Image (cartoon, rainbow, N blue to C red):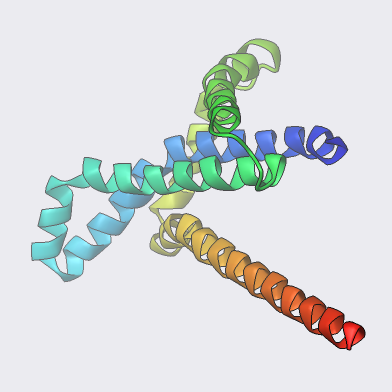
Length: 168
């Protein structure tokens, strides 16, 4: 419980930052990639251009999926209820919505300052790296989880073996 009280604000801040940035920069990054593809493979570029909102949605969904699965897991641990996870994800979403007003109203930071950073995402390499981050995180989290399960299983087998040998 102490860990959650200490870690929760850190993770909520990280989640908020990532939710705001994906909302601001994903459209620019996807447009950059689609434009680059269109220059080399016009048929695919035209197909993607006609469905750019769907492509932006998929990348946005990837960010939200990571945030809504990894952040609650990090804060609440594996033993969490569905309602607890729902309220945590709702809190993250609510923070993402109100923080824009907080930044503008209390800290005098306007969203146009953030939007000014979007020109970095007109670079193909930066856009590609940005759009691959949620998928890399998903793969890394999956590998980490599998390794932890394997280590726990090996530890259980070792413990059972030790107990059997101790009884003999």
